[in-house]
Image (cartoon, rainbow, N blue to C red; front, side, top):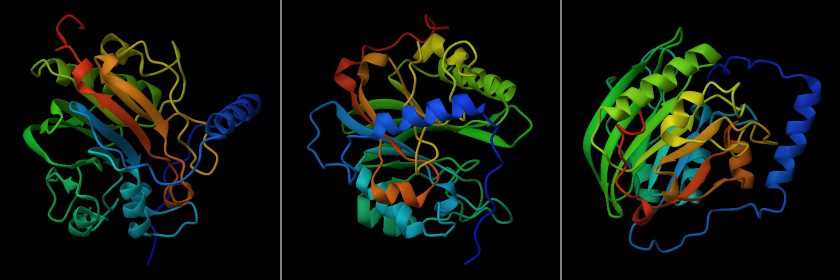
Length: 287
């Protein structure tokens, strides 16, 4: 089956920085036992969330294989998953996964967010939810030269009510900064509730140079993320799971199983959320 064209080339890094980050990424992932995420009972108010850029189901071996992506999703054992690049890039932009088979295998339901017949996502962003109900959905067009978008979903889950923002930001720094501002504006127009921002934010730099600095007013201060790209030997923290309030984010890691390293050019991120630690946030105060 023909593969989807590869993603645009990312900005080259200085050789010294590239080497240092490569060593750092390897060090962070060494010592972690690769393999499926352990299935564990959820305490009241606890849930597991994940973010995964599936690279249109094309693995690092350049093979199109939705089955491998479904298997990695099953490994994650998550209650909510934000997916990126879930639809074909050109033409009908139909979905690349078998949503029904995925639900039977994992218990995760794909929310209906696409405006294209047969599509899975909104600008490639999709949401999978286990035992939850969608209360409100907003689809955002994000500013910039590329066609980018985000989902803002208010969910009622077994663990409680939560807002999940699923996004895939652009390749240009100035556009990512504009898109971060647009996400904040959308969140602040909603009701106060625990909020997650998950997705491929396409930014690895910490601190002042980062295009994600606008997000610090709500989710910050932003700490260095978990390296997730490229999946074979990750050294760039392009994927993020951010929480408001921050205290509800109990732990986060890149899921580096052998299959995950092969199925996509990104590793998925997996985090444990404790909603019992989330005092109702005041979004206006964070403005």
